[in-house]
Length: 337
Image 1 (cartoon, rainbow, N blue to C red):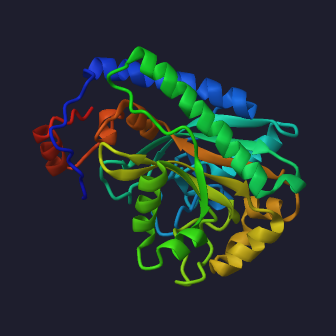
Image 2: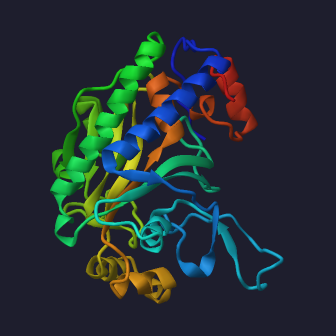
């Protein structure tokens, strides 16, 4: 458990006003996201069958929460989702979405192995979104233009939130700085990936860090872990902000252009996960039965935390926390829901 305790922290909103602000931010942002990216809101599952291969494996070491169901065969395991990275792509095909159309969902998940701190909870709530693109649009240009659209939606909500809560809205920079993980390693080769992210975020305030998952030239290791079967490691990235109240970088979104049949096979080999090719989702992808897409996740609680200047994600979501953490937060005027 790692906590950052800001000095002399005083919430500027009551709990009830905070809840009202959360409703405003969430409802307004999802409308703007749908408009800017041409996305329709769709219902999404809380759990999937393990044998479909639809669950997100994250870094490959996190344990999904699983259970059995009386109506299913005894050996059929059901898993709470980690995210909907694969499900969304399948849904676009199943629901007959067209070119440059997409969907977004209000995704809820449980990540039991999360390390709890100011930004991380075992309860995950995010807008998961996915959009169909043409094969020749699988480019860095498509990626950066989409990031700019998402950033403009965040900035618009910030402006509207500041009009309602002028003393409580944290102000963001006007532009996003784009950089690759290799460029970041070349700039600060002696720092850890986490330290590099903090350095660039502090310098540029809003950063989209590209090409995450593949091995870097200097260290021979990935900047950070990425599952090999949803993002193309050459066409993905994280949107991070410098968060002055905690003097730390804060990741708001992970997104990317999704794997093609070719990049899926290559990345599964590199990740020593070739056996996944036999799963239903992967077979469909390899056989060219799924559309080319771009997609990602945008943290709902994190966005509320960022815009409202909160010190702990527990101030904007109801989850569970160790008793020691609750005591520390209470002692520093952090109002955990």
